[in-house]
View (cartoon, rainbow, N blue to C red):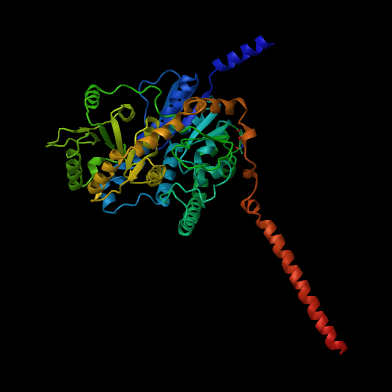
Length: 514
Ligand SMILES: *[C@@H]1O[C@H](CO)[C@@H](O)[C@H](O)[C@H]1NC(C)=O
C-alpha cells in the first residue's frame, strides 16, 4: 500500500500541469513579474502558455507564448512618463481614473486579441489553472470560466482594498493605506479622514466601470463559452471566484495588515536564484571603487534622458563632486563628461549591481521591484518617487528607517546632496536595511518554491474551496450590520410612538374625567 502511494505520488509529480499565465501590462517591470512565474513553473515541470506583450527569447519546449505586443500601442509610455512634463506639472499620472482607463483599455486589447480569441475558441485547448495578473481589472476572470478551471490572481502591488475585497474584505482605511499616493503613516485625524475619502473615491471610480466591464466581458467570452456548450457566469460572480491570490509583497517591505487565508505573499520571487555575473567593464568599475558605488536608476519606464537639460547638468556636477563612484542608468551618452567617477550605462543589470559588496547606496524612483531588490540585497536608498505607488513605497521605506525621500524638481540636486551625505555618514540606514534583509530571507521556504506549491495546491484540491472566505457570501450591508441597525431603530421608534400615544391618551382621559 505504502509503495503504491509512493508510486502514485511520483507519477503525479512527473505529470506537469497545463497552466495559462496572463501578464498583459506592457512594461518591463510587469514583464519581470510574469517571467518569474514562467521560470519557477517550468522548473517544477509544468507546461506554461504565456500571454504577454514581451516575448521570452528561445523558449524551452514547455513554454508556448501568445504575443500581445499590440498592447504597447495602448500605452504610450514615452509620452506618459516624460520627466520634464512631470516636473512642470503638465502631467498627472497618479489619478485613479486615468489608471483605470488605461488598464481597461489593456484588458480590452488583450481579451479581444485574435490569438487570444483563437485560443479560447479552440476546444482542444484545456488548462488546469489560469493565473492572471490583477492590475485594476477583473475582466480576466472569464478565462477560468472558458477553460472550466480554477483561477489564481497575481497581485503586483502591496495588498490594498481593491484586491483584498476580491478575496475577503477591504482592510480598514483608518490604518491600512491605499495604493494611491497618500501617506504611509496614518495617525492624525486629518490623515485618517483623507484616507477614508481616498478609499471611497477609488471604490466610486471602480464602480463607474461596472457597465463597461460587463459589456467587454460578454463580448470577450460569450461566443467561446457557446462553442464549448456552457453559459457564461455573470462577471459579478466570476470576479469573486478566484481560489487564491499570490501577492508580490512581503512584510519587510510593506505594512502589517491582516490578510485572508487565500492570500499568499510571495514578494521576492522575481529575483534570480543566482545573480548573473556583471559585464566585464562594470565588474572592473565596481571592484576598483575605493569609496563605494552609488547606483542611480529611475527604472525602465522613466527615462532619465527626458529630464530637463539643466537638471541633468546639475546632477552630473553633483555626482562629479563626490568621491564615490557613480553608475548612472541613462539612455544617452553624456558628450563632454569630464568626471572620471561618473559612469553612464544605457542598460543596468540591477540585481548584479546591488549584489556587489561595493554598492553603498541606490538612488531609485521607488518602484516596488527595485524596493524588493534593495531589501533582498540590503542596500539603503534615496527615493525620488514619480508616479503610481512609488510615493507610498518610498514613504514606507523612510518610515522603516533605511531611506531618504527627495522630490523631483529643480532643487533635486541640492536636496540629493544633503540626503547622500546623511545616508553615507550615518551607519543606521545600512544597519536597518540589513536587519530588514534578514527578515526578508528568514522564511521557511524561498518565495519561488512557495509560488509553485500554492499553484499546485489549488489544482490538487480542485480550486481550494476550503480557503474561500465566508465574507464573500454576505452583502455589504449585512457585514456592516445595517439590517440590525434598521431593526433596532424601528423598535426604538415604535417604543417612542407607543409611549407618546399612551401619554396623549392619559392626558386625554384626564381632560375627560375632570
Ligand atoms: C468557481 O470556481 C470553481 C472552481 O474553482 C468552479 O467549479 C465554479 O464553477 C466557478 N464558479 C463560477 C460562477 O465561475
